[in-house]
Length: 138
Image (cartoon, rainbow, N blue to C red; front, side):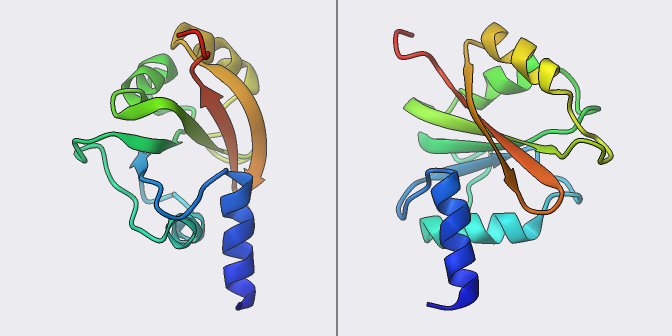
């Protein structure tokens, strides 16, 4: 196993991803970390799908910056193709970086969208990922 493959696996494990999962990417822009995207694709052994996928997905990766609009609306839209029991990983710039999202904004938006925050992990040099899930009794 190459060193990069080990790193890929580590990021995949932190995000709970496995080969064969379908991962939808929303909020892509020029500032996203292509290394994170590549590590995720290596972990799932497939390409990321976009919002036009038209079928259920296991996980949604939502890249989000402070000035992207209404976070509640984006989270609700992220649920459209998500399989029951699936997770949304909200990727935001780290604190102090341009576009950083205040943790209180995420904590406030999640329950309005019908989601709970479970875990936050650092991914890449510039991004943090927060796992959001729908309550089991939904």
